[in-house]
Length: 319
Image (cartoon, rainbow, N blue to C red):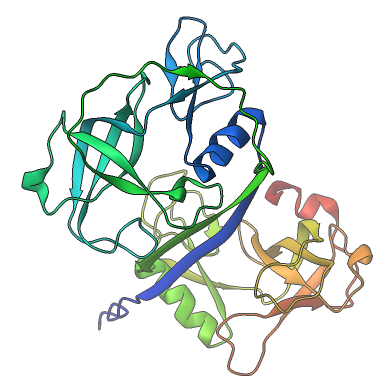
């Protein structure tokens, strides 16, 4: 008996990126607008503590907070970690220290970067000051970084009404995660089969559920899944949603439908886009089949087969 050779491990760079847009309440608006104007604001709690950055509710009592105060642009490092290899998008492009700085007049610490020649120049208790960005827009990056600065820690927080001309009322924060992904044995075989326009899952030897995509082990029984099972290609729509917001860099026109599809023979549903039918005619139980593009390594979308809808009892366990 000849053993089947293990598939070569797949690896590929993967980037997850999206812009996060949020509106600001009066406290956060005042804080960020203040940064634009080179003014550092905190908020005072009912016990007299000054929180920087300010928050809208007391983290201890949950009481609403509104008493803004101005603190100093100098402070003390409370803890730190050296960053020898800055990544794209970080505050500095040369090695620096991540620091927590308790600004003079504040009772909590602010996380930011410290520009220092090396880790030997950084210590807990180091006195620092804000280095303001040359161009400021009302964001935490208006603080370019902190820098060492010998000064006396004497500052009393002064009341501030939080009013500025043209206040910042919303921000867009880009989120990005890039890494190298390796799918493992089970999903490597799954992806290799997809490249051949086949969908292959793995059956649990204990409960007999067929996982598509395969996971290498049954999460219910905790045993390895090695029995490969080809499923589909047809399937049944179990649930779906209508997408009305166009995704960035996507060529798909809205509205369109994304659905969970239980392929024939599979023990759970996978997701895919439904096309070839008006979006308002997609329904639970709709029978669909994959549509491949030339050179595609996975189905571009699923379309109706023209078969009668599946009976609800045949897929209700897969919802």
